[in-house]
Length: 583
Ligand SMILES: *[C@@H]1O[C@H](CO)[C@@H](O)[C@H](O)[C@H]1NC(C)=O
Ligand SMILES: *[C@@H]1O[C@H](CO)[C@@H](O)[C@H](O)[C@H]1NC(C)=O
Ligand SMILES: *[C@@H]1O[C@H](CO)[C@@H](O)[C@H](O)[C@H]1NC(C)=O
Ligand SMILES: *[C@@H]1O[C@H](CO)[C@@H](O)[C@H](O)[C@H]1NC(C)=O
Ligand SMILES: *[C@@H]1O[C@H](CO)[C@@H](O)[C@H](O)[C@H]1NC(C)=O
Ligand SMILES: [Cu+2]
Image 1 (cartoon, rainbow, N blue to C red):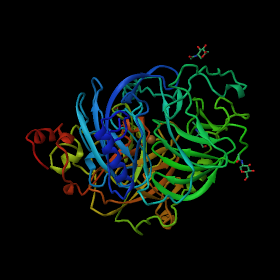
Image 2 (spheres, rainbow, N blue to C red):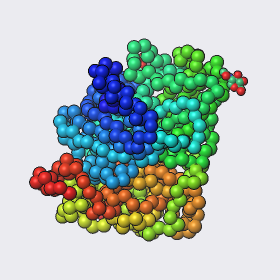
Image 3 (tube, helix red, strand yellow):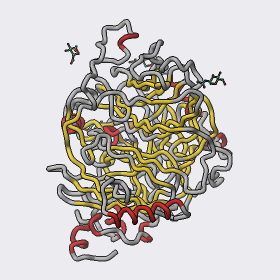
Image 4 (cartoon, rainbow, N blue to C red):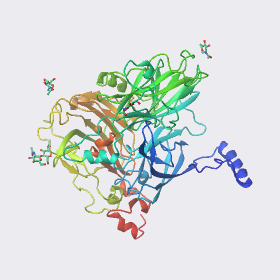
């Protein structure tokens, strides 16, 4: 519930007067504004794909409420955990949290999980306009449905560098009928039980299982949907007027799936990626990896007597999930008028050249911040699938991340001994490692060590992909960095060599917070360690992170001030906080 004034209709006269005057204030040049939200997180019955399941909702909604703010605003979310028996946190994906690292919402990293019945107040500034989202960051709670949109408009008096007449948000996700508890147990069992492909793809939390609104156009036997009375799973239709330009804000919070988005007959012009403007380019379809967000512009210049399909399909894995669909409804047509042609067909799931061609086109808009010309330090991360004591894991340089009981932000700040592995994890891997074959010795180890960076140092990360435990298979991993944007300096196939450094793009590399590594390929990133705090850097595929696919970065933690006690009231820092220690 948004607590902003004027949101309810019946109020005493003095409040009406107050609302009136604050509306006047808002229209003048008011600087940073605090936007308050009171949220209850709870399990509830819901039918995201017409089949009833249990989802993690906020204030009775799924997906959670949209936060809409202006650049420079302060967001205040009072989050109460109404889950009966488990902790919860929420991460504000793409928000850098300058000065508020304790509000990043990562359990065991930036804070203690919020206990059932407790309330935690997130307070942070949204400093940069763009398309963002939020989601659970504890266990696999994002897969359980704990997510929503976070949209930041330009500050008053500022303009976007492109024009549009209206906008829509498309929050994309994938959905399983098996509970996350079953999924988690399967992933950490011997023998290993993989979660499999999702049952449905959701657009704004809505999909259709075992039926298709497009069945009219398909010669296959798929059943047509009877959506009568099923309000929770009817598609969220995009109502447009002819000859206008619309901004679609697209974000993917999928647990697993890489997606392709297309709109029948309409080109999309990409203008924003992860809250940063990019050089506009037009495409018929686009790939979106988990953790990424985009804005595209579409022009409604097609035959206005028809409606058109908006389709979302799985890429990068052999698809076993039907397309997610909704309609682009040209008003005044009826929204129940189905398009005259079938939904766009996605490129072949393993057409990686198509994916690369899209990804390589993403370049910074002229005038964007440029990267420093050289790094202070370059680290290399080999991504492998491994075994640890017979369990299947993912490892980075042979270490699979295992989070400690005490949040790093507290244990580093207060120098607590024994809170995590004090040994610095490896920042290179063996040159003789063959990335084209499964590991010769599949065993690796678990660890909780931290990569510490000198304040304001320039860090290069080379992410190196490799073969998994199965012969001739390498998977896509979208890597997401907390607390920073990074420049994507380049991509390549095969093993990275020092010669590749000369091919880095220092002219107009895109700034992003998520970047993909393609099968058997590498991706080079650069960022400035200028944000005091402890930051997760991890694969955004939720089961992969759960299986250890991440690392921990930290810089300038000694400078962090005013960590709320509640953030650290667990583990080894719990005692300090009980004594009401004031950091
Ligand atoms: C799919 O729907 C059809 C028709 O409604 C029904 O007969 C069938 O049992 C359903 N299959 C599953 C797996 O739910
Ligand atoms: C849209 O623009 C085209 C070309 O300018 C014009 O021919 C058409 O009548 C317009 N359609 C509507 C519905 O305004
Ligand atoms: C890998 O670890 C298992 C125990 O989990 C052990 O039995 C096996 O010998 C190890 N393999 C190698 C090659 O070290
Ligand atoms: C990874 O770690 C395991 C266990 O410590 C070790 O046996 C193996 O040789 C290491 N592999 C590589 C490639 O470093
Ligand atoms: C793996 O790929 C290589 C090279 O393409 C091929 O020679 C080999 O037969 C493949 N192995 C399997 C098990 O598919
Ligand atoms: Cu991954």
